[in-house]
Length: 481
Image 1 (cartoon, helix red, strand yellow):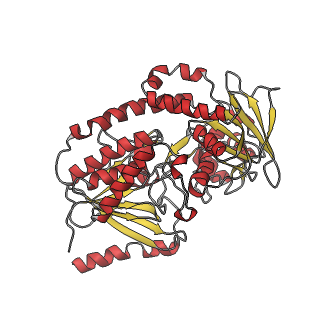
Image 2 (tube, rainbow, N blue to C red):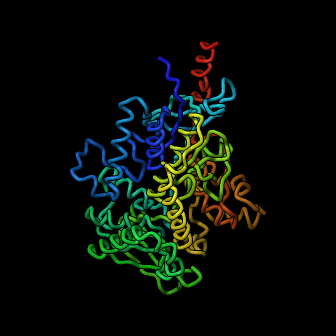
Image 3 (cartoon, rainbow, N blue to C red):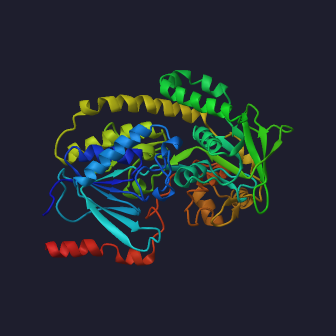
């Protein structure tokens, strides 16, 4: 039997995507939830594999009850046929459907293309009347001498290992960089039995004093931070504020890191260097929104995030966006945005004007959390002169093995004035990750703003998949004719 309900494709099953899928399904819309992970939850709600038989998975999480409610709601909607949950599907393109009858709300419709499973050699297509992007964010990585030594990993990578496999990369760790993610990473590693030799944060306490109004408006967040601080004290973790990593040491394996104090201008102060023995360095400098799919659709960006209105609609008809893809703000903000986006999409697809009063509490929470996140963005900023610590022989683009010296030569010697020209001259950003890892570093070293780079696809795609793309849709259209 044909299901003639309006169809919404939600891409990403983290907090925003889950909240959106549940909200839309509860209001009469057929939802297909598409996610690259084997289970719903995203990075925030990542859990150990069932085979590990973890007795207390909630020990690595806060807001566990929120996750349980979301998981129960998703399971209910899947069981009743309101939601189809597609796991291990890596979306590489969302294509505007130009042929056929418009959707229920006058939309042209979309086709979502996804690669299947770990091998990613076959593709699936999902047709939908509208699309909701909840693609999350990724870590901002800034290089330093020795950052390619085995044992150096991102803060999010260390957390993912711990949450997903109950594994750690060593016995003694230093957690360094800047941002609120460092706190749960350091406390999580310490609770898992790792000796955390130091938490190295480039921001100092005085930075928070300049944002007391916005921060005080979220007492729950302040209390959460205090809980992390208490755990650090309990595990006797040394906290070094206004410090940064200068160098990682080791050949076959990380052996130590050198850190230094920062002056008021964000420069490493000579004579303050100290060497800390460790076999793991978990380092992070914040996050950036995943906007690849939004860019291929032509969605407008505000800075690095997708621009949305008060309903979480982008400027492309039929496309909503929620969560970290609209700007980094944490799980609570993602949940609020996802709830609003799901309700708005359901109403619009059913041909009705949304009842904004139904999401008023979520909208109020969204406003407060956005203000809080904006304050944190100004507090947690990488050292202003971090590029001074990047030596010419430091590899910046790991895919193409391009050094900082080559990038500087492209600017100073060859006259490159933007990131794209540097890319053409040096191949920095032409590798497998397409500049996602090295992009911020290349921009910083060239003195250019980090601008979006529109790509035809959101991820590498086998040629065979491209050759077969559209066959399923074409066959369906032929049958309809």
